Image 1 (cartoon, one colour):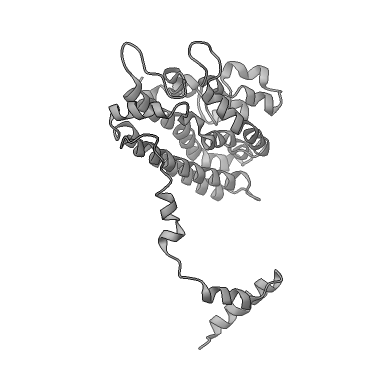
Image 2 (cartoon, rainbow, N blue to C red; image 1 turned 90 degrees about the horizontal axis):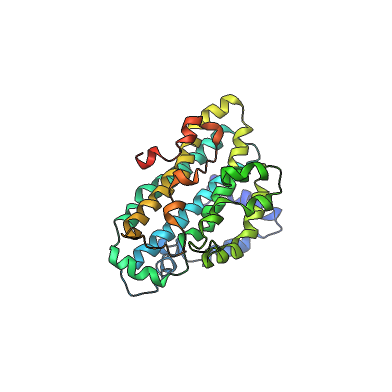
Length: 309
């Protein structure tokens, strides 16, 4: 029996498909023959569980792979939320708050779960399988760099002493001086590591396109377009966002590096050849997305309190 409600829905579907020059009858035939959807097909479970390809037979390498895959999925969700802020046809406080809360939740989960990396692997197993990963490095997370680029003006991603001379330069030149490029140089010679050369070859062009796309609509630029009252409402979430990404998240990596790579009389080098002792601590980088939201004292102590100083 066709109820009035079903008849109305059929009529609306006919209008929808007619507007696209399509026949509703053909789509209904497809629905008749289609199998029922299952959970494992919908989330591609078999594919997901077969995306781990360890380079060694050492068991804990799977922990390392899976955690980094989870991390990249959270980054993908964060980039989706950022896009909804930066490219909103009409940016409202509700959109800002909703998406910032999502991103902060994603990073809060990542930060709180990093114990899986700090204490969740056997140290000796890690030091064995890591040598099979050369020259790959977590440094090469393109999605994390995309989060940085879409969060703030590109000049804020350059070390402070270099900013005055780059203030009026083209984005391409500013990108040449982005802070992380100096974090993947050979410790002995100062030359670019293979890790950095690989990364630049794959990502520098997409990074420039992204920086151009978000030049006037990154999160910081979008915030500055709000009224003072609106800015006051979203500021606490932006401060948390800044701390999560620029202090708490790199601090977790630093703690992990200390756990696995600290060894007297000298520290073990990272797989990418980076000087992790100098590069990872947030107090050394002092990268801040929203400097206008912090006092001079807070900026001067950036990352120090979080490190127990």
